[in-house]
Image (cartoon, rainbow, N blue to C red; front, side):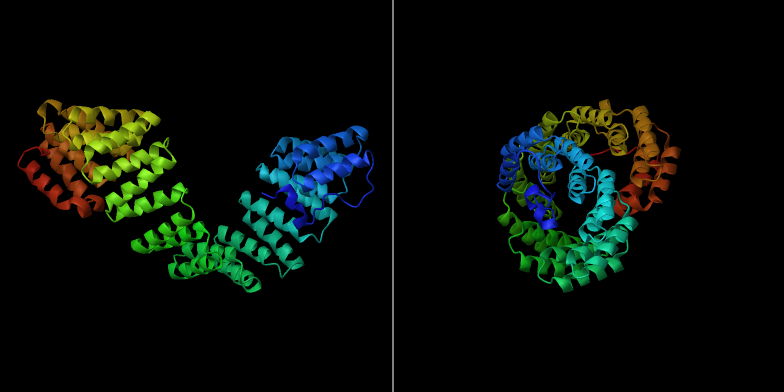
Amino acid sequence: MILPHLLFLFGVTLFSPVQVRGDDEALKQGQQALEKNDYTAAIKSFTEAIKADPTNAEAYWGRATAHWGKSDLDKAIADLNEAVKLDPNNEIYFRTRGHVHKQKKEYQKAIDDYSEVIKLKPDDAFAYSQRGYAYMEKKEYVKAIADFDDAIRLEPDDSAHHAARGQAFSANGDYDRALADYAEAIKLKPDEHTLYVGRALIFSNRKEFTKALDDWGQAIRLDPGNAFYYSGRARVHHNKKDLDKAIADYSSAIKLDPKAAYLYFARALIYQEKRAYDQAIADFNELVRLNPKDAGIYESRGFAYAAKQDHDKAIADYTTAIGLEPKRPGSYANRAYAYQAKKDYVKAISDFEAAIRFEPTGADNYNALAWLWATCSDGKLRNAKKAIDYARKACELTAWKSGAILDTLAAAYAESGQFDEAVNWEKKALALPDLANQVGDSARARLKLYQQRKPYREN
């Protein structure tokens, strides 16, 4: 966002050098109020000026700027429309309206306004640059690159233009040219930390993690108080599977920004990956304190408790998540697994059914319920027909390409006494790598049972 009081940075003065008309004192007061960021007073003064002279484009522009400062974008556009009607040759009005349209995410309208600026002022590098950014928002990267080309032609020593074109090249998948532009930008402005960040992201996209780490390190050296930079480097360490260094960087980021929930969440996930569940739970506890109404946090903490085999606490967290979001399928499914681990199969079945009700295309929940009906140690709860129906539904949802689900279908046929079918589907399941690589031994043991015309039972 380009704030109204920063417009002078982009060649937009508070008043263009034309003869002002109407209530000069009201205009002067409006200008002074704008300079103090007192937008309410500015609106009042410019309104008085408009009443005194409804043809004064400057007054409409000033009031539009004040409305923009108050984030009343529709009123800002309305006043800028009047200013443009009254003085269609003043590029400042089109430029400002372009900025406001861009903030409203009305990118084509912003492009149209920047195009008018370029017609009136064809050597305005900033107008090309801003239109380029608007094209990027529309994912029209070739047009964006062309505009950044013009900005560079007009201002070849401006590092921002090279970085902008680098972003466009990167978004368009041309990483080599993107890196060349960032190298030039860094050469022009070697102490600008944001340039190293932009290049680090490209290196990460190319999986050149060592180079990405170097650039994040430079950014941190230049701006050591920026928590985002530590988190960016942490993500690269995580990609390299250097979990301890990732945790260290997230910890540094948390010290700098202790209220940033995403940092605790990212660190908690890495702790879980390390099976350091107590540390993960500690981070989730802090997240609960920061965001007590976020169902996802309770569900994530419940998963950590479940990994510790503390199923009661896991169930309590999943229940809280469901209370906050009663149609959250993942919380029902996870609670079902926790109930299943406690051998409370009736509640597990009920929760799996709820998960399916709220996510009818979720193959995993059909599969879990089919497995329970096919293999449950409590004979009163086994149901071969439902197990086959639900297992086949899961197979359909996964295009019959999941070995784990075909394994369930085999168990369901075995429960129904159709052992030839069970053998057939177990062999097909074992032919798929997801099952053979993960639980091949247990699946082969089940195949032997079916060949002996025996069903499989969970202990």
